Image (cartoon, rainbow, N blue to C red; front, side, top):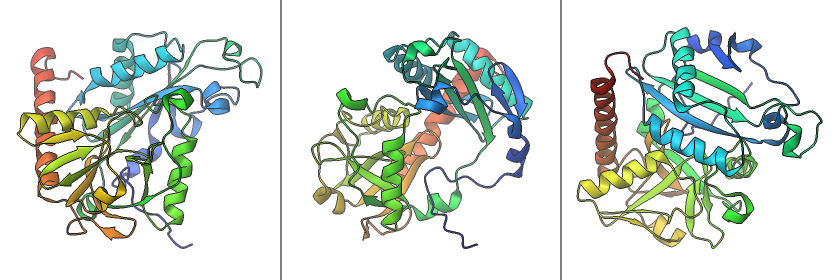
Length: 319
């Protein structure tokens, strides 16, 4: 069979240990091949749930508080009662990581759905047994090849919609619009999709937040129609602290095609360079440009400082 895999920002180095991990499912640690939920679960049936992706670095869940802020805000917005505190969710992640012998270079996907339904219909009141909570923690190191080469984007017709349709700040299980965008990008021969906002301005990709560099300035979208990314916010903060002009603004493909550099941000990959958009090389067309490289170093230093500060307050082995 021909390998048709295209690189993405979520490509990870292969790790055979992931074939036999234990997964947390509603209070139990179960083998990967037995980690299942009911076909009546609202997440499976309707995409009715929220999730967070977090990295484990040197025993610490990176920016855990910010991730919990986003998760609890989203669940509150759609009236999902998680039924657990932040510390109880941290304990679930800790237990799952420890059961798999993970201390660093691990990635968690924490999923909360409205739970099992009494009937296979839409109404939320049919979910009567409390939330479903699943934590998948994998050995996961971002692909060095993707970081070195960069990803190729294609602008797609699928857009990130208005907040009164489905607010893109909800990190929900309902990702069909992003899946459609990804399929459109693949059909165009690209790795991932560059999505516009409802007004035609450059917005985000199907999986990550998007930045460009023009004449030494860092540009990203207004944030009105994209995920309120935690890495995105950290990069904006780092730019401001380090004298890099940064603007959250409307801009078009015209400015994007003429950018000297472009990159993506996300909790898994951190900062990933963009090599080309719609077949047009960005900068040197491969790997990270100078400002992207500088921001990547600053971000790595920020993560290291965060981990050290967490350990200083809570002691060795704290997460």
